[in-house]
Amino acid sequence: MQTPPTNDGGTNDSGTNGTRANGSELVRFDKVTKRFGGTTVLDRLDFSVSTGKHVTLIGPSGSGKTTILRLLMTLVRPDEGTIRVDGDYLTHEERGGQLVKAGDRHVREVRKKIGMVFQHFNLFPNMKVLRNVTEAPVHVLGLDKDEAEQRGRELIELVGLTEQLDKYPSQLSGGQQQRVAIARALAMRPQVLLLDEVTSALDPELVAGVLDVLRDIATTTDITMLVVTHEMNFARDISDAVLMFDQGRIVESGSPDKMFSDPEHDRTREFLSTVL
Amino acid sequence: MNLDWNWDVVGDFMPVFWEGVAITLRALFLGSLTAFALGLVWALALRSPYAWVRWPVTAFTEFVRNTPLLVQLFFLYYVLPEWGPSMSALTTGIVGLGLHYSTYTAEVYRAGIDGVPVGQWEAATALSLPRGRTWLAVILPQAIRRVLPALGNYVIAMLKDSPMIAVIGALDMFGEARNFSNETFTTEAYTIVGLAFLVIAYPASLLIRFLERRLVLTS
Ligand SMILES: Nc1ncnc2c1ncn2[C@@H]1O[C@H](COP(=O)(O)OP(=O)(O)O)[C@@H](O)[C@H]1O
Ligand SMILES: [Mg+2]
Image 1 (tube, rainbow over the protein chains, first blue to last red):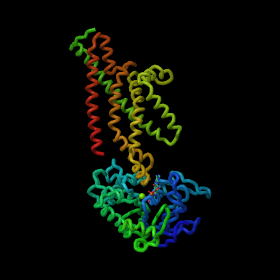
Image 2 (cartoon, protein in one colour):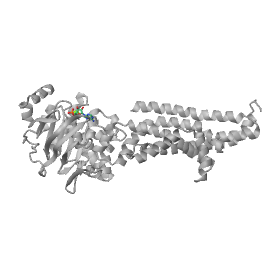
Image 3 (cartoon, rainbow over the protein chains, first blue to last red):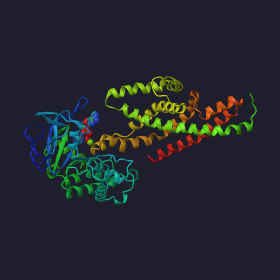
Image 4 (cartoon, helix red, strand yellow):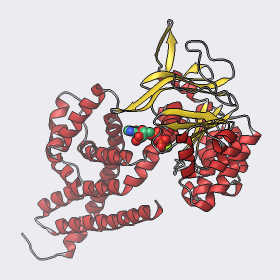
């Protein structure tokens, strides 16, 4: 067991191996190991996030935070261990009592519960803002075009970009592009939203606008969030729990107040002193 | 042989010259469409996860790219009909040009597809876009946009190779000029046709350069 006991807010210790996830656990990692080449990036990682909670992952560069989000988004696959989302195995399937690697269809279904916003936005440059937001609802959820556009407009309004509806991403500032990316992810109505350093590619004066939108979403919706950020004030404001990572393991976890004001581990204190 | 320039000969050549121009442009247009479409098929097949798809396509495109167009035209026109369908000289010419150049456009598409940032694939995955939709709506529009000038350059190259279809009997500009010159024992027609190639190709290459610059500016 790698995880120190954590009962603060969002995370539960996974002391009950082999038993069924309890009802309020939306995301659960069980002994997840990920290697790249010869290096073990995540080492039998256990953690879980309860429905509706906002959990922030902090830790030095290279500690595996992005890898955790990319595992959840199925952009990389675990070498060992399992990930469950809303009780369903993400990249595994139960077949005849055995746990086997899941087929594409299964992965696709479970993945629909997850949305992600990337550091570099990754908007589709060949589509206007509105179509960036409606493309997946139309072609994945099967909404008809009018309905998708109406929802798209609402989301674009939510992120404050109604004026930019008809522009191409290249005509927008980085901050505006990232807000479109947030709208695009929300348009799929995911249960979990993954945010990977979404402001770290932005010019400093554009960061606040994006964080305001995210604060708004965190307080007005019941979406579950996994957040990787270096914006510690933001993390403190929106998080139910903070996990401190180092070398692919959770060093310490707790409420934001405790983690930021009175961390137990030297490693956490040391890290926070470099970013606060 | 008459080496003096004679405008009467030019006047006599004009009616068939225009017919030849129409055939050349038709062969170029349909040949390009064929090359664009088939090249895309090859490029996608070469990215197939299945070796039994990739392997024959690799062999075929390498073979076609590394043998002369002229030989391919003769093969299509004289040998293929022994087992398969026989096509008119013009149709054979169009198929030959299209097939030959498809092996080049396939490489162009490949480079274009490889040039689409990996983040675009990841965004498509994160949105659960189906594979077909990812190609159609996300990857190909970006890939093709950035290779338009390269595709255009191959259209010009095809134009310059197009007189080869005359050797199997298609009456493009060059075919018409050859027939006319042989019948009248004159040479003016060749000069006219040479100039006609220049008049088509030069503005086209200027257009491509313009396109190239615009793409650089807007991306
Ligand atoms: N695709 C990859 N190939 C090889 N190594 C990788 C890859 N992705 C991440 N890594 C390595 O895994 C480690 C953890 O990376 P990452 O999850 O990005 O950390 P963080 O987001 O905390 O900075 C780093 O050492 C990184 O170099
Ligand atoms: Mg990272």
